[in-house]
Length: 226
Length: 226
Image (tube, each protein chain N blue to C red):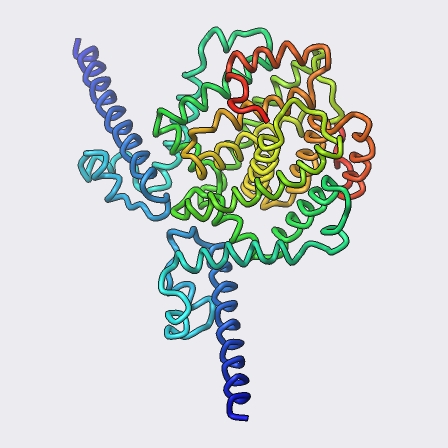
């Protein structure tokens, strides 16, 4: 009986801890929309999160720990955001295109995803976390491209690992550039162009039109033709 | 006679001014290799430049002015670094590939070019300068692609302006990713893959092999085949 009550109590306190942690992650992400990572202080983050000095210190001793928690939470949200119908889709390219579309949407609407991806870009002091983030993406995309390749859908003189790194870098650059130029209003234009380039460059000819039709129905065609 | 001496004196003082300015640009670029832009202080930059407080203040009142001067100097160096034989090359795609190769080399060896491009990426507070930088690149690349198109070398369902933005974003992402993962040791792998993807995706079939041969002789083939 006592044991059961202890368990319940511990769980309640764990819930509170998780709630505080998530408040700090939300608050810090909001701060990083206004200030660069290196300029923001723990004090700013505490203020924006609405938690006490003690709670803050209990969960995070240094700003870098908060940044790493945001990057992790961003990965979790992207993972959790994938529609099961997409995650189970038999076609790896459709899966990739749909996931990239969803990330565009999350970048538009979720400040934690925005902050996590910005922090993971790697200009700053979080180089190790950045390198891990990129490596995880190259590996994940590479596995799906490997499956496409085994299914005979690829027709390319470019090795699968280079194609995968190329997609991840292309996506990264499109995100950054549309952020700088239009606050990401035209990000999906960059990403749908990326996919059209990829389909032309690497998909076996017999399958290109079908994938382009999928792409257009997912992203819409080009807003303005030449 | 007096007039001539005044002119000489003014020129000598202008030379000193330019020298101080360029010392500050070099010093600040070195600082930005170690610290993020927003974390670096004017004091750090003054120390690294070896100029007096007075000289510093005479040329730059605010850190942002130094950042803008670095971005401008980076543009100048890239422009000045283009071999006349390349600048005059009749083939726009060979011109673009060779310029991208030269920028990879400058990024490896010139800290002002590195600092300028990093500052212009646009995560930080220099959004306007970033947007201008990107727009300049998209426009310049677009003009060369337009010429390719009129020469009948393009065979693509992607409008020239989207292709141009796609190349600039792909290059940007490759720079950033290779910086985060290998301190740019493998940047040319990203850029040569970018060009191979582009050639497959957008160049008329009859010209692809010739351009790939140019690409391989410029960048070397893939280090590791699949």
